[in-house]
Image 1: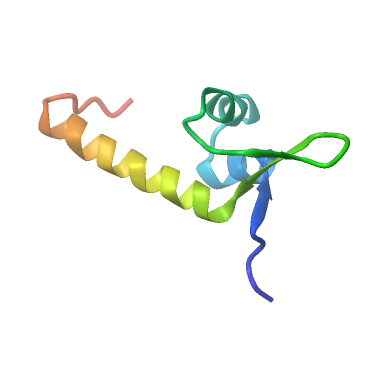
Image 2: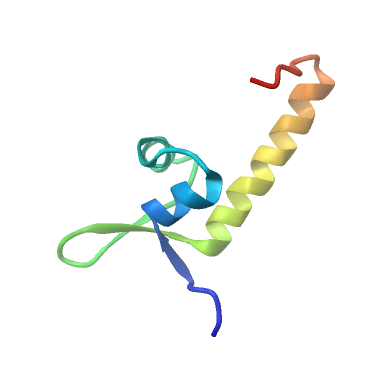
Amino acid sequence: MPAPRFLTLTDVAETLNVSLSQVKALVRSGDLKGVKLGGRGVWRVETSELEDYIQRMYTQTRKSIRHGADDLD
């Protein structure tokens, strides 16, 4: 069975090992692209968008480390 195209915000939180409120903040800020679907307005994140976000964070982290911000808190 293929992987789902869209993830719930809870699924995203579990994947990133962060809280649901952190994922909501990422979507709200536009850092992580999400889409509101249906009449009840449920939020979903496309799997490819999550992967893009993760890659951007790797790139940002590498740049940060190069510039001396290497705190691992």
